[in-house]
Length: 254
Image (tube, rainbow, N blue to C red; front, top):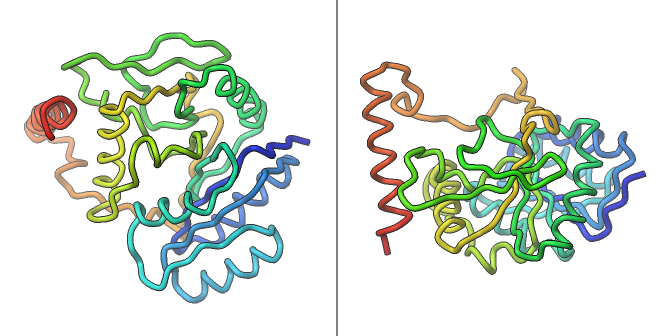
């Protein structure tokens, strides 16, 4: 059995109750027990909300709801407010842990207890973070230097599965509650870097979690065509824009 009394599992949810059930069952099937579980819901449809109350009886989590949809930032903020343990494992409902994750979570807690300066340990990403130095146990420490050429440096923080200290909002501020999901994440990325956050990145970054977006419960994230286009001219312009904007926001904006 894996027992993490000092960790609360925080799950943000919106209209994907079957995905949430799969995630919770995955933790249970691997004999993983937390000091608490918080499910923060962003005004899901009635049928999903009813399912959340059923699952609450089965899994014993704390359910935090809202009468109107207020976006991911508010959903994380109110969920984090309900956490009472020293550490928070943040996972969105469409992810599922793999067998190797639980041992890595144990190691992560040991690392964060020993290295009090670490704020976050990241377990999943779409891409390798561009600036890493070896740390140990399969992790690397992320770093950044002024005007580094890789614009993906800004993604020092990520909303993908990670372990963090529950004092995170006190140090880096609350999540932005206006605008899109991407703007919410970007705002926290900038805050994390400007306030000199420290974090580890798991080297085999797609082995500990899988993301499950089914036909019945697809991803709720919608991006503009401009951000997804593979047209070389648009891609070049996008890269230049991001490099200028990200460096301005990180080093010059007040």
